[in-house]
Image: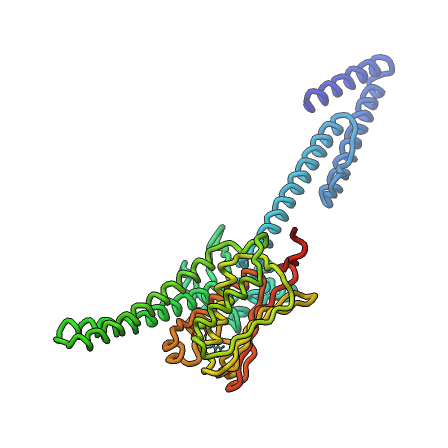
Length: 429
Ligand SMILES: Nc1ncnc2c1ncn2[C@@H]1O[C@H](COP(=O)(O)OP(=O)(O)O)[C@@H](O)[C@H]1O
Ligand SMILES: [Mg+2]
């Protein structure tokens, strides 16, 4: 195109020059030709110079304009430049988008170059590894995460993960290679997972231990009965003791099943009404049966309210507090069941005049199998799971368990319910 246009122009000029030569002599003809070719040359050079100036500093959207064939050439360059700019913007957007996605990850991500220098990291990594965007980019990761386990892992270039601990925090770190000798360091907070793991292990150990004791006793008696000829009275005694051990195991299993049912059930809905007055009356009757007349039992109830939740769970939580009060109060003592209400909500409490609890034990009472005095708990038929069940069932009703106690004087266990779990009786018709 350019060749043809230029050739045509030159032919046209040569024709004009020849005409001029015929009319005004050869000199005039050549002069005309030379001047017009020079003009064209100057015109081209000026465009070239403008193009060169732009190329030296190619500001987007500032591609020089031109005329004639230069208009086409520069126009094409202009379109190309616009296209590139658009693609760059798209890429930039895509990159920003990816970064936002990586920022939002709950795991830490650190991008490292082949020399382990930090190129980029997300906010989670910043928090977990205590990095600082202002000072740590470009630094070697080994200078910032200095735990020996990690340094060794970094040098060994293994592809499993390594665990490091910091005060109150356990992290799992993993290096993943990508691209050309680049690496990605992933960090994950495993504190909670490890805690749950330990709890599960302890729990299994505790359960096994709790069941093993009565089982050992049971097996011992069985062997005795099997091997020895016992008189009928002894045999009856032994069978009685075996029954005791078997029921103990049964109680433990029942409590464990209750706990696991509470664990897996959805939170207690707040749409079922549990009438307090009859519930307290039943609890009182149970207390009297358990006490067998050895205690004075009182109830105080200052409002006729319905609780919102699951009756079975509330009854089991309250029932445990009541049975504890009876079991840990010597004969002659008093146990008081009370319901009090205020603007903030309601409080069910069980107060006794029993043996009380040393302050050091109070925070641990709701742990599974925790007992202040193992043998006393066992003798009275306890499993050590009652308060764990109670706390759990209460939590599902947005209630908290509070314990106040004076050793030798008595204890008060209270379940505090927020106002939204109460429904005044007189609102129902
Ligand atoms: N009213 C109370 N007075 C004194 N100690 C109590 C009382 N209630 C609970 N405890 C202590 O808390 C421990 C845990 O209670 P719980 O979980 O119900 O187990 P359990 O009653 O089966 O022993 C009891 O073993 C006992 O040491
Ligand atoms: Mg109990």
